[in-house]
Image (cartoon, rainbow, N blue to C red; front, side, top):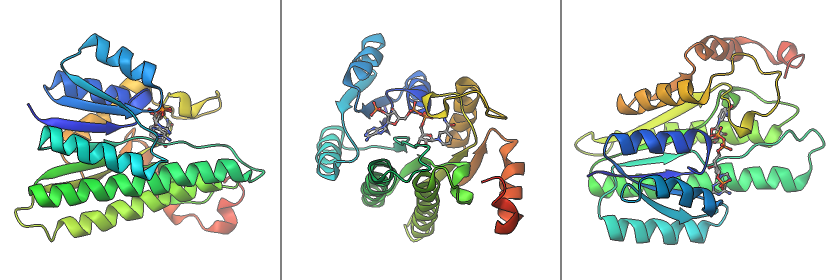
Length: 240
Ligand SMILES: NC(=O)c1ccc[n+]([C@@H]2O[C@H](COP(=O)([O-])OP(=O)(O)OC[C@H]3O[C@@H](n4cnc5c(N)ncnc54)[C@H](OP(=O)(O)O)[C@@H]3O)[C@@H](O)[C@H]2O)c1
């Protein structure tokens, strides 16, 4: 039975992906801060899940969990990073900016590096991270969130380049870039092209199985990505 770790599986996309993995006979180690939700997930299928309360802002805790897990399970073939936060923060409240950077940049980077080093040592493995369409431009309402997603995308590309140095070509890096997905991260009702959690997660899981380098979710967001890449800042400032 292959082992997978999902960082940020108490709700939303991470929880769904963990369920899909269990259906495909993975043993899945799921993490998050809300331990009672982890317990609820495990209760449905106790043998399929291991659970760990973990705040990815605490780098030492990530490391301790990671080394314990690898020691216990020996091999991990898939690591999915979905732990993330984002705020509307037009006033630039420092606590919110700092929280976002600690979670989406510092925590994410430590997880990426631990995963990559493990896969390099094992000679195989697949790192997946849920970045965002937000990675492509700046945004006046949520500067830290948009910048943190740009950081993730570039870091993942760097690891993809590095993976090409590993003999055997069995280490993969996948960057998932959703538009709007109907989870607690996308609260409100003025979102366009909002994908249901089910639809988005199925498309993400399919991309993971195909070991895609990068993918936009849902597929129609490729069009928005193209627009975001070509529109100049003087025009973009009217919408972002
Ligand atoms: N929904 C969208 O429209 C959308 C669009 C683009 C990208 N994304 C990205 O998709 C990823 C998943 O988000 P989601 O939409 O599925 O929302 P979600 O339901 O809020 O899931 C976020 C997950 O991250 C975990 N998390 C947050 N802070 C954490 C911390 N400090 N330590 C450990 N775990 C933490 C949460 O667990 P706990 O709260 O229990 O810790 C939760 O399991 C995020 O990275 C998000 O940026 C979402």
